[in-house]
Image 1 (cartoon, rainbow, N blue to C red):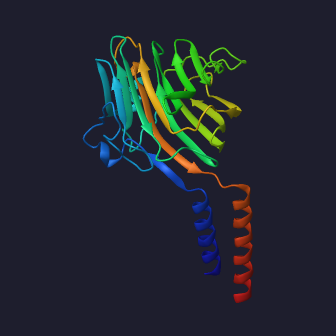
Image 2: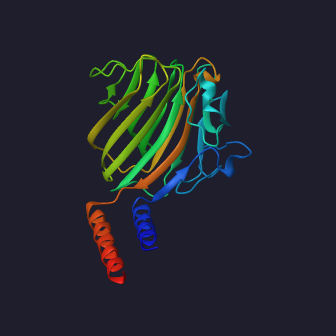
Image 3: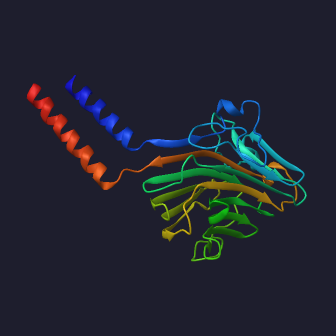
Length: 267
């Protein structure tokens, strides 16, 4: 019984330290009738910790809830509930932007993560991490380029620094942004694929100084030949979590030590 109480106490302390402050995925009930938006935010708004989605597009664009495995055979799987991901597509060279604002700017201890899936590389598709309407960090897939970094100073993972990110039809791209302060962060990307020989890759850019606080993000597709699934960008599993500061770890350790002492005395 005492051991059970101790384990339960530890679980509560650790889970509260690593709390989710924002999350959403395509299986949320808010998207049961589709995924829509307009030029201003406030339309479909699943999960918590975000404002509603906003869309800006030219003609011939698609937004829907659809299985990411449709990008290829096999396709990259970022689905929730087995078949649900956010799909963004544009036809005949058109462009489509889908954006969302955090309920508050990201700051010290926040970690923003999400998953992307993509296949064909014609046109451009990716994500901008933004301060107001300015992109302060970008990941994009375009032709043979896998750009990762701040606009004008990032790296092409397709041929830069010996990364050699070759083409895969079923790539899953997991991105993580860990904030030390509002304007100082580390960015990480991991790609997984079933391709052989292995095309699994990862890369990190540390100590990035941003020009402003991050308060929103934008996913986009532009210049693709058609709006078929293989030309689309799929998005899912958006989360903001809080990483405890060093002092929090010390507090947890001290609390657990006191619990152990108390349990022993009662025994």
